[in-house]
Image (cartoon, rainbow, N blue to C red):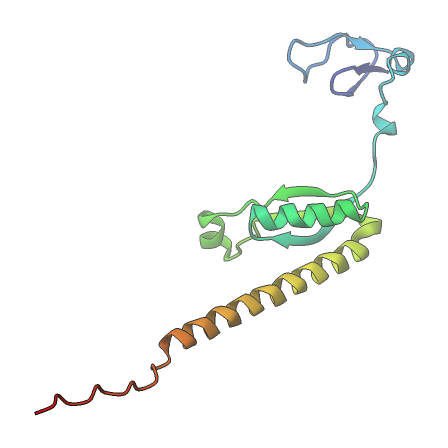
Length: 153
């Protein structure tokens, strides 16, 4: 077998150039790949990434990625592929971002994301309550002020 040093594709003997890469680089043997420190296709990462959560906006997904990075959980983020056409044709509207982690880390990552979302919701609820309280204070009637004494006659 021969391999492309750029994309790692595997080709049958007799093929000399990669058909997938621009410039059609020449293919090399497995020994040459090892000499160059390049992995063979069967040596590549075989982890299966699964959905641990979703986020509706880029800022939330960024916070979730930081959280998972701190927990040393590999994370891959994929933008949801949906739009008006999907909603019209299927009735489904996918979340903006999918947060994917290795299958063996899914339970732990899901738990961390749920805890973070609950913490954010609690913070949001507190902020909403504070804003409502402030608004009510502004709407409260002022205490009646004493009228000035009538002019002397």
